[in-house]
Image 1 (cartoon, helix red, strand yellow):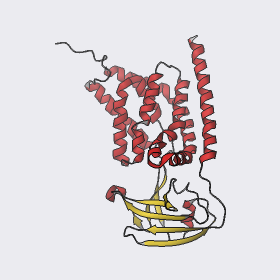
Image 2 (cartoon, each protein chain N blue to C red):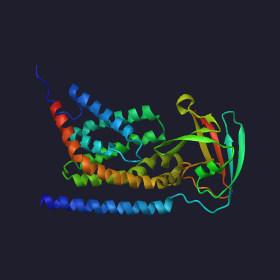
Image 3 (cartoon, rainbow over the protein chains, first blue to last red):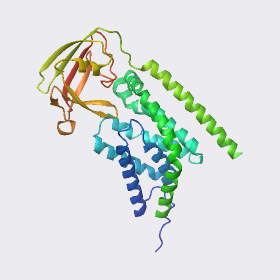
Image 4 (cartoon, rainbow over the protein chains, first blue to last red):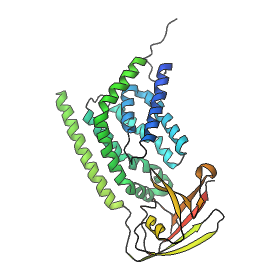
Length: 175
Length: 137
C-alpha cells in the first residue's frame, strides 16, 4: 500500500495538520479577545500574514474557524459579515506577494491593511444604508484606523521574525 | 539587483503609506461628524419595553449625545465599552439583554437611526432624540 505525498495537496489535511490549524485558529481567537481591551492594537493581521506564508491555502480553514468563533463569542451582528471577507482580502494580498522576504515590507502591508480596515468594514453599510451611511460610519472611525495602521506597522516590525520562525518550525515538524 | 528591487519596493511602500495616511486625515476632516453652537435645546424621548414614553427637554452646551444624556436630569444609563464605542445596555434601570431576549436600546435622531455611537453623535439645536427598547424579530 502506497501513501500519497503529504505535501502535494493544497487542501488535503493530515491529522497533524488539522491539529496545528485548529490550534492556530484557537490562538488567533484567544489573542484577539485578550488584546480586545487595547483599542485597535491587534496581532490578528500579523498572524494571518504569517499563517498565509506558512500554511498557504490552508489558512482559509483558520480564517473561517476564527470568524465562526468570533460570531459565537460576540454574537452574529452586521459586523460579523465583514469578518467573512476582510481577513480573506488580507490572505489574498499576502498570497500574491508571498515571494517578498523583507520584514519592513510586511510591516508596510500590515499597516496599509490597518488603515483600510474601517473602509473595508464599512462595505455592508453601503448595502444597508447607502453611500451616505457608509461614509458616515467610515468617517467616524478614521482616528481608530490611523491607530490601527500605526499599531500594525510596529507589531509586524518587531514580531514578524520571531513568530514566523516559530510557526514555520512547528509546521515543518508536523509534515 | 534583487536588493535594489527590494529597496525600491520599500520606498514605494513607504510613500504609499504616507499618501494613504494623508488621505485618511483629509477624509476625516471632510466626513467627521461636526456639532454646532451653544445653548441648544434638545428633546429626548425614552420608550421602554412596555412602549411607555418618557419625555425630557434639555438645555445644553454639549457637543455630543453622551454629554447631553449625562446632563439630563432623571435619565440614567449604563453601558459597556466595546470595539465600536459605548454600547448602551441599560436606560432608566431597564436592561436590554440581547443574549437573553434579543433586545437592545436603539437611538434615533429626528426619526432617523443614529449612524454614530453616543460619544460621536453630534447634537444641534432642536434635535429630537428617541431611545427605544427594541427586540430583534
